[in-house]
Length: 201
Image 1 (cartoon, rainbow, N blue to C red):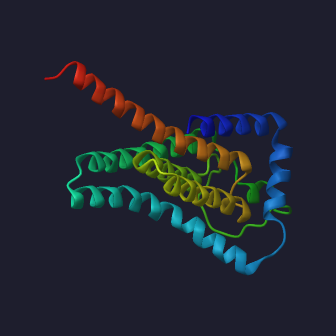
Image 2 (tube, rainbow, N blue to C red; image 1 turned 90 degrees about the horizontal axis):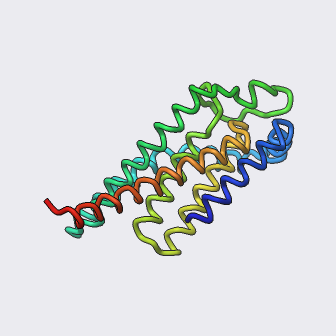
Image 3 (cartoon, rainbow, N blue to C red; image 1 turned 60 degrees about the vertical axis):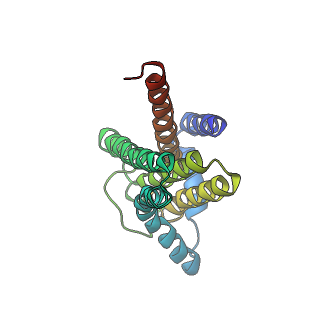
């Protein structure tokens, strides 16, 4: 997980150094050519990100309570905290940085294939998807949960570029915020549990 976070940070720094032109050129590659069936699928994937962000903690809580598994219930609450934290950070960055959407800045070069909010950086959909993926991965710690979860999150990120909604750096930043929020939540909980063990009430 830490390696993945490092790779995302490195990619974000690399793309940022290369500048806006490189960001735009990569986006144009993903956004080019009309593919109606594929674009319809990408809209569905993109739309699913926020519902999945709600379903993930609810599913963990339901699973935990049904099994009377206190640790799983706790993970459900941590998942909810992760989603709220990630989306709070993402929204805060959007209204602080106020980056213009690529289809607004380059209307002759980027095809707008969906409807969305005002600002571009970071991608909220990608943030939600990676926060959900990180929550599931931290909860179950199984490759057959981790790999599909992050594959789905990556597809959400791709869909945002394919639909012309975000630059690659928006997507990378969203992934970073989502992953970091999950890792931070689980780390703080671990420290809290350790503190209770050292200083029992």
